[in-house]
Image (cartoon, rainbow, N blue to C red; front, side, top):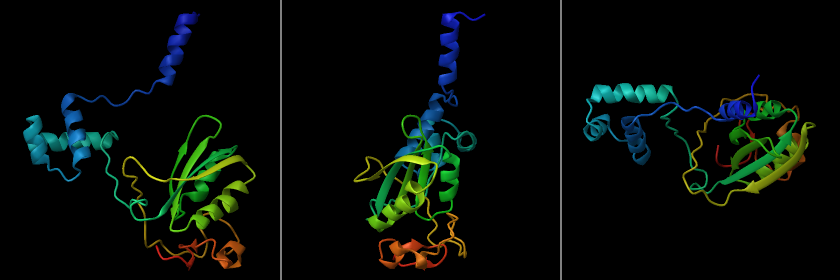
Length: 206
């Protein structure tokens, strides 16, 4: 039987993630790419005193382990778009996430601990469109009990969102709602820009 100390040690082990092991050369490679994503492997090789093929092998391993990732997309705040952070509590969080996976306005989502169990980010050229998304799809969802909606004013580091500016056309919206945008009062009054996927869109970004 485990005693109190062993139990505590076991709990600490469960609560601690074990990241991939990185040596000093790995850390130097990651730091150089973070400072300049276009840095050449030859330049890295000279700094860490390895051959270019050795650097290439390390880069491949770091990418496979998730230790070196590159993200290409837009910076909504620099482009003058609005970025919304939505914190919510839901008894069916996976269902909420699945609803937005194909949504052109959806930036990213996180499962979190605390009073809220989801943190979602959306972007648009229109604040009222973001409000319409939250009111029409999140606040009205039967699994959702609490929602906080905030507009991000500024970011300390660049917030990059991979985006498809030419989404594949579909007669069905990715969120799965049966109501057409053209029949929605928010769309009719120009409070919501509509869905770029279905073509019922009255904005200028997509």
